[in-house]
Amino acid sequence: MQLAYRILPHVLPVYSNGTPHEKILYLVSLVADVLPPLTDNDNVKLCCLLPIVSIILTGDHNLHESILYPLLSPLIEFCLASENDECARRSAASCISSIISHSIHDDNIVLIENILSELAAKFLSHIRQIDHDEKLNTSELRDILNLISLVGSATLSRGGTLSRFGDAVATFLAAIACKVDIPKTSFASIVSSDAIDWRHIPTKIEFTLSLTAGHALGSMLTVSNGNPFWKQRLSQKILTVIHPIENRRSTKIEYGRLSCVSYLVLCVPVRALGEKKYMELCNVIFNGLDVCNDFSIQEKTTDEVQSLKKLLITSLLKVIEVSHVVCFFSFFLFTGFFN
Image (cartoon, rainbow, N blue to C red; front, side, top):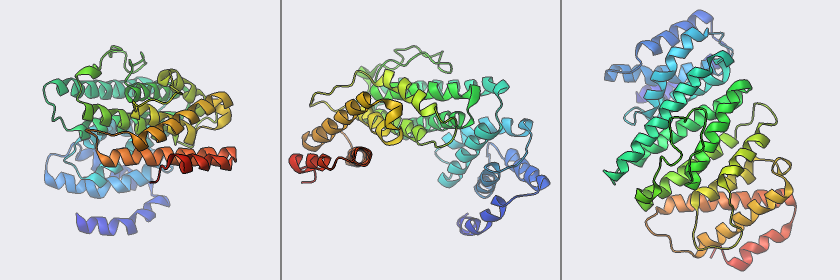
């Protein structure tokens, strides 16, 4: 496998420059034959094949939907299986994104709805286990949230009728990040609004889930293609979930909400947010940086807290770039943030 990964970087460019249709069909059929992998040999084949197929699917492959649709469910299961090779899982995720963004038609929206409903149900099923297992592996929850975000991003990239699923995913992730009731959405209709009882979730797991959901939402906002107005529409839907936004200084840090606010400032144009709302979000970032600096954080991993600080600083630099107001630098000088 190590030898394959050494060779693949030199082979992949060949497939990005166009591949005969018969060869594409052959490679896709090889992947379909070993999904899900039942043996170590199957896993090795997927580690070699998935990077190649992911490159092919990002281009103009002209594959019929009847060939690609059956791959979605096994690819999703492969992505969620933590025992599988990490590079192969990333390639599988790329395949999922390409199939949805390039090959799904508006008359197949039920397929996307079923995928998202199953992922949401799986996530909530894991959440319910926390009461019985406080040592639950949060990496599984993180993988599910990231995959939900990936599917949502792909639907936004596809546009049209499918974009409503991107909106639903964004509000779902924002609700988890902010620890509020989950809105009724087209894919999570089976989920009651109070499906997550945050009172019974240990603080460390609550922190990880909230921040992971915020980052997953941020990855959706970084999508650059699709309808030019989708970010304006999506940001307004997110704002309805993350409100009320506290402008006053508080000793309570809402990590997920801070990450959502930071990504909105980083990825959404000021005109799409509105100047008044934009300044409200900036105030939240300033207060969040101040509180993060002098608040004693307990039961939370240092790496995650530091990543949040970096995100807040990055969003602040974006504010400075957009506003052309040099005096924002004085915030660091007077708070002693870097001390």
